[in-house]
Length: 520
Image (cartoon, rainbow, N blue to C red; front, side, top):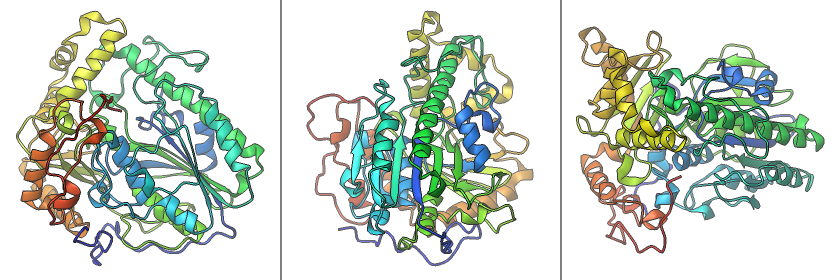
């Protein structure tokens, strides 16, 4: 049994309002909820101003609802992010600090979550596509289809077909989560004729936050955009199915990406390229079409849904209901938004971080400063391999060359990422892509100190187990002891016990396996 009560968080409220109690925002009737989740993409959509995106359906959805321009995930990793928006908690609160594929899991199976709360409130609950959170039994969906990641993109038309069957199956209000495989690696140029007219490397440039744009990566970037275009068509089919059902006018539609792109300075980092996502909410009669600039987080989704449906409130949630931002007036909102990172696939990219950002500044605290971040080489190796597979045989070692040829500030940014200091401080107003670390400059000492204080207060309020150096040391030893991929999802991690003062039942980090598993 976990000794520390997991959901009885401290009563003091941060100045940001992050831990504020949720107000009740009752709608005239209980709405349905359609939650649409895409894989591994930031706000590379036309409605967010991306010049290469071809996303007319998502652009239309944004025009009909609220587009949150500054929305962020709790951690830029698949399982970690999904666990957070489903539970309304940060990874260090719920326990899913790494991929489910590698055996990372919630501390407790009885963790409150969206499907459990809405099911108790009389909703039919369904999921199409992967859940990717351990244990799956913690999420009591009534209906589950296409449970794998489906990165081969087989039978993509089934997502809308099965969704339509669920939506029209009865008159009881529903919650349905539809999880698409795009734009996860591998980035496939065309599947089942989608997109109809694929882009090539001649049509696109790399995302600005890369800081580099080697021609050898252009085909890869083009296929990332092709994946986004295919996603957009599939979302259009899904929304058409909802419209045919006659239930669109009483359905909250939420679209989000689970975190940023699996490319340079994106996924598996606390940079904007990893944390910032598209978030669109359409609720007919309740949302006014607009763009909001407030700092919002995916941990806000659970309190939003509980308030909208009249479900029983859950105490201790990390976020707050988004309803005050649905109208066109000003709202009292948070001034700071928080995020974190632990690992993804064990030792290959273990580098724990905590981060806070305001309207202007971002502070990242590296909990293991001044050592090599293994995720830096892991990402570069992966992307070089992808380019080589796409016919760029001479690109081996090309990323270091491209970085070496970049501007001094970009070279410095990659050096910081490879061997991070304790603090990284960025002025997002003058440096939106986080190329210049201001930590250590005397004129920014006070800003750093203020943000560090806010970050530490948030960690204390949310009972971050890694505030204890012994826990950090023990987690580091446990994770870095796992080498290679053979262990897969059969690792028996000890951290869910010793984080809370109890020795784990299994002392070995690795259990026998039958086959290798791919890191999703």
